[in-house]
Length: 258
Image (cartoon, rainbow, N blue to C red; front, side, top):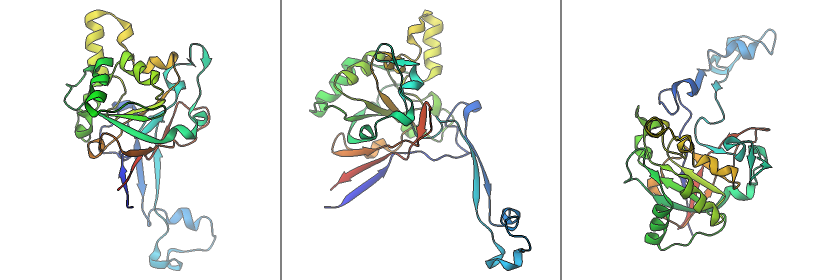
């Protein structure tokens, strides 16, 4: 049996607008010549001529927030409490058992940017797939944002998962979800327009805030979801262990046994 790995992660890079400007990552690259003073500083008397090809090391300085790149959000990101009043767990407390599970893909690429997915939409998609969700399945949502990565409108692209859709997934025993969009919820630019029209603050971050009621995590800024079948793959998404943090970066991968 052959095993196929599909990278579900975006890179950390300077050139792509993957977050609103104040939150974008910054990578400073230092090559083998630029770092010579770093290496010679450790060894008094060492010169460039003493080193093979006169080279030291390559190294990078990366400035990030925990929500840059493909990452797993902990319940603490959504609210200070979960499960109707319990202390929300942080990323270092997320059970690793949640992060290596069978995957299910919901294909919502046909929904317009800013659309808020409903419970009925999720039920219809699962019925079309002829699949019944199992406890701890990792449910990933393929939106138009996946093909918009690299474009200036990426952070405005894709549909979002509403409160009732999120709640329905959790009621089926799902504890990890994911999206290839910037946010699990509809893009802020679209939510802003609806809020200005209605004045209803409940529309803001409605999918995330379901975490106040039920404990769950979600992946954001996934990639290559269009390469996945609806079912028949395993997702690995172990987060970097950052003490007391709201999220951790992950090299999310889908594994298919063929």
